Image (tube, rainbow, N blue to C red; front, side, top):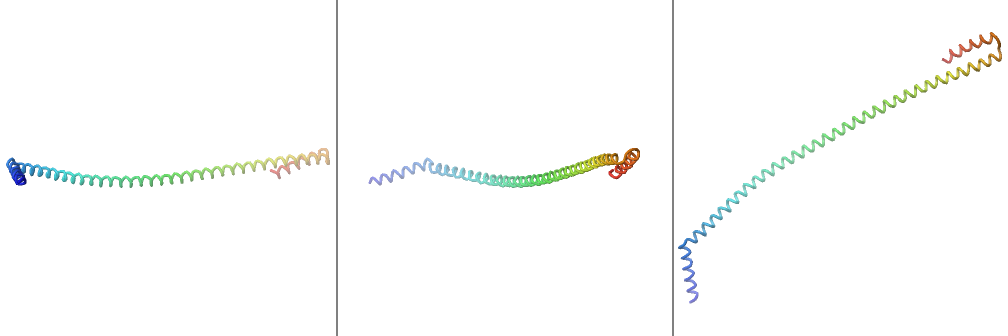
Length: 158
């Protein structure tokens, strides 16, 4: 019997709730909550699409930046190679000019040394000839022979 009264009390409780519109309030609260969830889902979808667009845009910018960076690196490498080749050419030119200058100085020094040796040899030969001629021939004949020999030696050596 107790269960009968519990069943009756439950039915009365449900009737009172129905009379005061509690089921409508619960349904309306659930509907409003469902609408709010649907709006949040729509907003989430919109934000997701917007985020995907931004991601695609930034990916494109990243790829463009990588391409630009690669072209800058390639240009820098080309410029470095060009500068290295230019520096090498200048260095080779400098070395060639220095070598030529040194060779010219050496040739000039050789010719000067050769001229000095010839002059010294001519002087020694004339002194030796003078001594020989003076010791063998004396007087004005020796002086004439010495002058003729000296002119002949100078003409041949120079």
